[in-house]
Length: 156
Image (cartoon, rainbow, N blue to C red; front, side):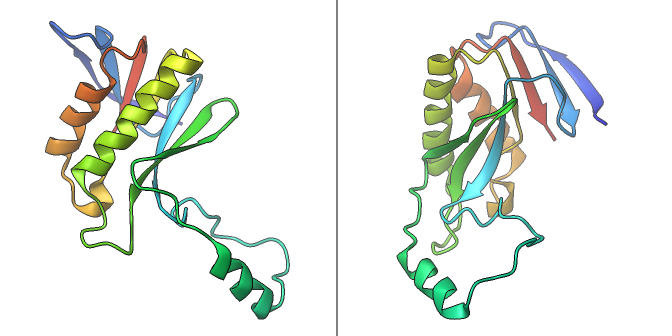
């Protein structure tokens, strides 16, 4: 169940005139943005249903894994489409930078335009990396304006 917290009206903006701030994810939207790290650890399942292979096979598979690039996005098709924003690198210090968020948002904007997505849910990005909401939220609005979104949902 989702709960609408606040409703805002923007003046002199290319974003939709009305956007909603949500606690939880609203239903019926086209895309959801999710924060992710270079090895996609944050979205990995907490519960493993299948028996694990031999430890040597696991180690060999892990040895071959190449990290994703920070600033990129990875798409999981479906309804809604899940857009993984690769903004964390646990091998770096700090683990998140504003320029990585900017790059991911630019890639998200391109994806929105290509797929003609009309509604999207975006949480404040970078909070796990100590990027505050006061930096993240304005950056999200700045980068996603002119994207053609008609319904913009901001998570809290």
